[in-house]
Length: 438
Ligand code: UD1
Image (cartoon, rainbow, N blue to C red; front, side):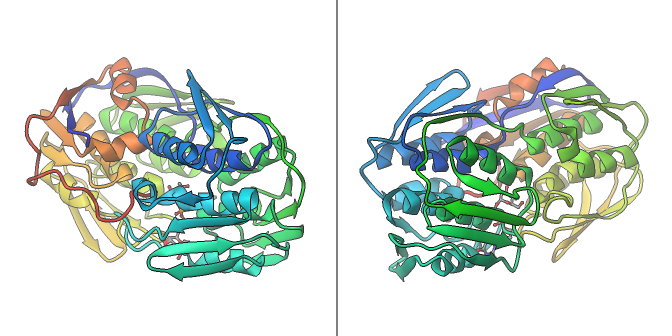
């Protein structure tokens, strides 16, 4: 259990450049895909995150050899001798459901517990299961477990009723093990899907179309050793840009794909920041008061990312005027609002809509992260707040941000990680009942 806290004295402008980690949402399905290859897979730019550690636990449980050297991880799937993921490992990270398609392709059968709900609300996997069934997998749901057999999967057209990221990835992985052609329509178009395609192709798979809403996979080819560098994390980049916007100053995020961040940077520009994008970096400068922005509606890519909603809300919380956020992807994604209120924010939530009335300033407070991106919002708010904040619940933040305090301190923030003497704000340290997610 992570009993650390971040102690932040806000109000110092940030100045400098920050290197961006490899994308969490890209590395997880790619590490799952390593089990399908016939030789050692090398994944570069692999971020040091607790979710990545959870993925290593699953790979090792399955029998794979996993070795990290700096930011490179080598996975040797050849000794793999299991096809089940135990409940305790599934609970560490809800997105481990993406192992389903990969293990089916590797072993022809897979068994794991049903991944239940999480901090963001109910998290059904009906789209994953109906698509795998359409490819011919037999799936039994019994006693909270999923028992799947897919020795004879056959490619076909699969139309997703919603462009689910995880379902698109699971189908791509399973389709590599199905004979013939699978065509996914209304596929998710997130850059991380394209990154998975790059890795699968490096292993010898026939996949095309990722990044568009139709992905075509010709399955049945033997996959071999490969090497791949993970895409930069657009959500971590959005968070550091939001930090620069909130605290003021000049922040450059390096090693990013600016086109992946255009919806976020256009909102930040509207809030009064100067934003300049190069080929692989973005510089944000702010020295005038923040302004309210037009309604921010989260949508599947290329729309505004749900994962950047909360960090941007922390910026709007002390802008002049009223901003509206509409969350269209997850049911329960405003849990940071109550914590922002402790810092003086004036935000009203009705269902999927949050109305943010900007206040002149936020004040330091003792706040607790209740989910990953909500934690990022509190961090951004604390950097701009007057006085000292203490942020607990870091097990959420550490799932998705690699050494955030070091990166922010290098930008001039007054931030340090300390041991939390007691259980923190709001009473005892609680673990969410379901698996951690997003
Ligand atoms: C991924 C990302 C997460 C991001 C999200 C949306 C990872 C590890 N996580 O999550 O950071 O916020 O995409 O961009 O990549 N749904 C169903 N049935 C299904 C699958 C999904 O109803 O079978 C619903 C979900 O409950 C949710 C919505 O569809 O409301 C989006 O989910 P999805 O795109 O699948 O997100 P994840 O892959 O879980």
